[in-house]
Amino acid sequence: MYNFNTIFVAAIPFLIDDARFNCKNAQGVFVECSKEVACANRQNSVIDMDRSYDNFIIALHLECDDGFKVSLMAMFAFGANWAGSFIFNVLGDKYGRLKISKIGFLLAASLYLLYLPPITYGLVLGYMLMFGFLNSYFLQSYILGVEFTSSENRDFYTIVAQSFDGLMGTFTVIVFSLTRNYKIFMISGFAMGFIIMILMFLFVPESPRYYVATNQNKKAVGVYKYLAKLHPDQKVKETIRLLEEKVNSGISLQDDDADEIPFKQQMAYFVKTKKRVAIAIIVSLCWFVNCLQNYGLNLELGQLQGDILINSAISNVTGFFACFMSYPVLLYAKRKPAQLGGFTLTMVASAAYVYVDGHVALQYFLLFLIKFGIALTFILIYCFTTELYPTQIRGLAFGLANTFGRLATIISSLMVGVPASIFMWMNVGQSLLIILFTFVLPETKGLQLEDKITDDKVIDSEESTKETPEVEHER
Image 1 (cartoon, one colour):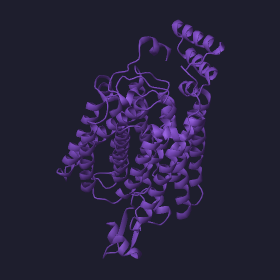
Image 2 (tube, helix red, strand yellow; image 1 turned 180 degrees about the horizontal axis):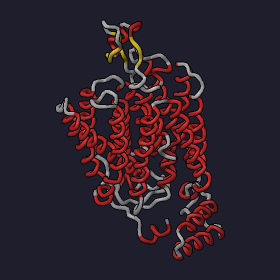
Image 3 (cartoon, helix red, strand yellow; image 1 turned 90 degrees about the vertical axis):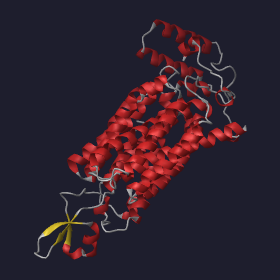
């Protein structure tokens, strides 16, 4: 549910991949030729459909376009996602993670079907706007999952959640490798969404932390009882029985009333002290760089040496396995050293990529290392954002930070057509910048997830606030 939008994002390199041409030579025989030569003499050139993807470029007759219209499509999608990432996360804090996730997911999955009738450029721009906006629900799905965790298993959940990013992307690669047709991809994307939709409605409850934070204690106990059925342990059942008795006696599961916090007061949380302002800026910058590197790499796959299908397969499969390979790092390393290591790997591998021009096998290996570093740091910024902010404003915190991430995805749309060497040097500079700023962030590994915005321990103190066994058991 969280990674469903990746299916479409992973398809973008295929949807906008340039057509391959054959040109008529002096003997009247069609032979392979470049885009520049073919477009300069369009009457004596044809699209080679055996080597091209039946995609937006061909459907909209943009095969000889200078790239502006293609970049505009990506900018529309990412721009709408930028606006939606803030709105959906604010709504999630107010109305519940599950409700907002369901609404966004249902509408986003249905949008795949809009691409099946004949399309025009104007319609595709409109679809991109809607798709980008509605897919902003995805962070609420992640927060929904993370609020079922504790400090003991939060790392594993994050690994599993992020690994499905690569798995969904691999699904896209397989569809395009077998069909090379964007309409079949749209049907496949909707079918996958329909399956996830059924599972979501059957098995996923609302976050109990959201219910507790909003003083809906009976509903919270109901979710705990549902979860207890999945984990039939007598101690867990006894704990939930005591919670139910507490609620039935009129005692809140919070220490005090969890009244709805005014939006102005929520925003004030981020600027209450200079340290909070600095951390908010650095976290937002981390999101910006991670998204620019990740989505920029996706859009750059067609410009890298080698076949776009192989590049996409390496990128997505690496994203899947890199998450599980990085689990020992998250399990045994602190957050800050792990982030330093991830960005250092991305920086070094990106710089090396520029100097091995012509060695395709070596560049494939370096692409693996770059994607591994990006996957690791992407996981870590989710961990940082989750652990730095309490439940009452966690969605808002994700929304504000991810707004900068969506801004980066808008900029990443300009990567279409950018030489690989320039993109790699950008990676080097961005990674170095985040390495320097990481030293300012507080260490958050093993910290208890706070629920109320009056709990200032995580940001305002470097002291450990690890959960006690009793609190951990109750969670």
